[in-house]
Figure 1: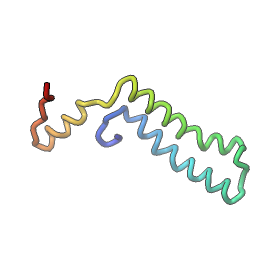
Figure 2: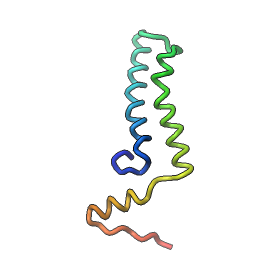
Figure 3: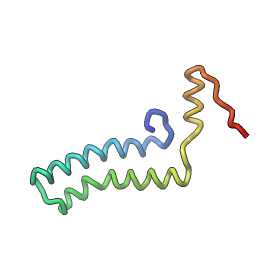
Figure 4: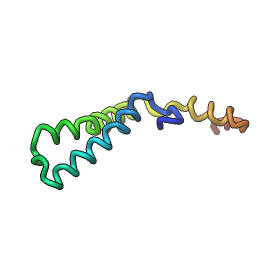
Length: 85
């Protein structure tokens, strides 16, 4: 999604930042550095929760950007397909 620009760039970046934070937070809970109900755990899970919610809402409301797919086809030298009636 990030490279093809099917959605706004901020959405994939939020997921790419949030996933490592969630993994680190889960590992710290696993090794007992903090409790699973601590504020640190909630802060670690917040970016990925926002990403999941915002991506779902964006795709329901707006959908993918089809122009990003056809622009990639044109750049590669293959003609864009016409939609069938």
